[in-house]
Length: 63
Image (cartoon, rainbow, N blue to C red; front, side, top):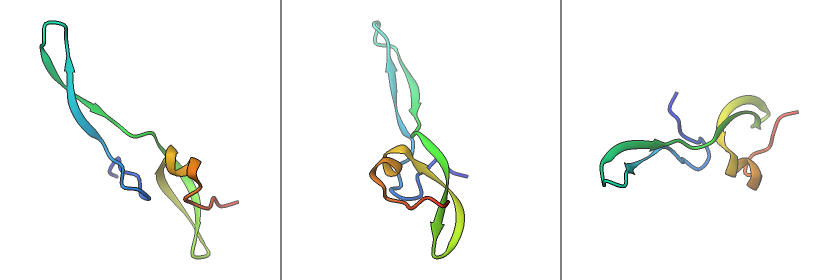
């Protein structure tokens, strides 16, 4: 499974750690994904959603 939000498509970001000596090493920032049970079309399904989508109420949680 990819580390991508199934609602907004947010995924990893790639950049550099930069030291005081200006040495650069690769770094990855991962989104805060949570596995949530969602009611979709009358069925319950588990999906990986970022916390921003959960806070905004873009999904309807299953009981």
